Length: 414
Image 1 (cartoon, rainbow, N blue to C red):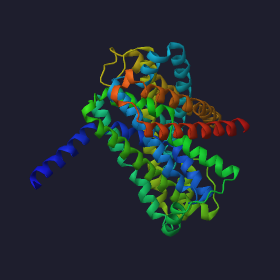
Image 2: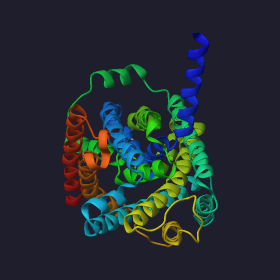
Image 3: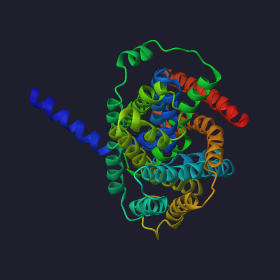
C-alpha cells in the first residue's frame, strides 16, 4: 500500500510540474516596478499596520485567477476572444484600446525600473535600457513557449531576494504577528488611499488576459485542471509573501526613521544606511529582476489581448511570419517604451497616472464580463460557478468595483 501511495504521490507532483507555470508567472509579474513602489510606500508610511490587508487581497486574487484559468482550460480560447464572440466587436475594441493604453504606460514604468535599479550600481540608462529591450525582445521572438516559460519560472525564484532583505532588516515579528491577528481599521483618507492602491497594484486587468492566454497556449486538458488550479493558488500565495516582505522591510527601517519614498529605487537607496549595503543591493536587484520580468510579460499580454480580440494569429510558438501582428505589436511596445525612457524631460508620473486611471475603469468591467462568461452553461457546461462560489465571486467583484471607483475618484481629485 505504501508503494502504491508513493507512486500516486510522485505522479501527482509530476502532473503539477507539467501544468504549472501560467498561474505562478502571472501572479509574480504583478510584483513589478509599480507594485514594488506601492508596497515600499505602504511600509514606509504606515509600518506594519496594512500587512493584514494582503490576506483578503490574496483570496480575491485566487478567486479571480481561478476563473480565468478555468475558462481557458474548458473553452480553449483567450478572454478577449470570448468577449468578442459573446458581446460583439464594438465592445471588444473599446476594451482593447483601454488595455493597450494602460499596459503601455506600465511598460514605460518597467523600463524606468530597469534604469533606476541599475543606476544604483552606476550603470547608465543609455546602456541598461537598450540592453534590456533587446534582451526581452530576443527572449520571446527567438524562443518557444516552453523555453520562455522556463526562463520566466527561473525569474520567479529571484524574488527570494526580498525575503532575504526582509530578514536582514530585522523586523519585530511580535508586532507583525499582532498586526495580522488583530488588524486596526483606522481608515484615514491617506490610509484608505494606500489600501486601495494595494488592491489596484495586486489585481490588474492584464493579468486575466495573460493567464487565460497562457493556459490556452499550454494546451492544458480539462482532466488536469485541478493541477492548474493549484498553480494559481501557489502563485497567489507566493506573490503575497513577497509583497509582505517588501512591506515589512520598509516598515522595519524606513518607517522607523521617518523616511518616505516614491519608488522602489528610492527604497533601495534609503535602506543602505539603515539595514546595510547587502540589504540595499538585494532590494535593488529584486527591482531589476521584477522590471525585466514585467517588461517581457506586459507587452506579451497586450499582444495576446489585441490579436485574440481581432482574430489574428498569436502565440510564442509561432514564427514571426506566421503571426506578424502579434510579434509586431510586441516589438513596438518594447522598443517605443524603452525609447521614451531615453528621451530627456519625459514626465513619467503623468504617464503612470493616466495608466492607473484607465486601470481603475477597466478592472471592474473585465470582472463583470468574466462572471457573465463563466456562468454561461452553453459555454462552460458543468464547469460554471456553483452557488456559493458565485456569491463569494460577486461579493469580491462588488468590493473591487467599489474600491476601484474610490481609487479612480481619488486620482481624479489629484
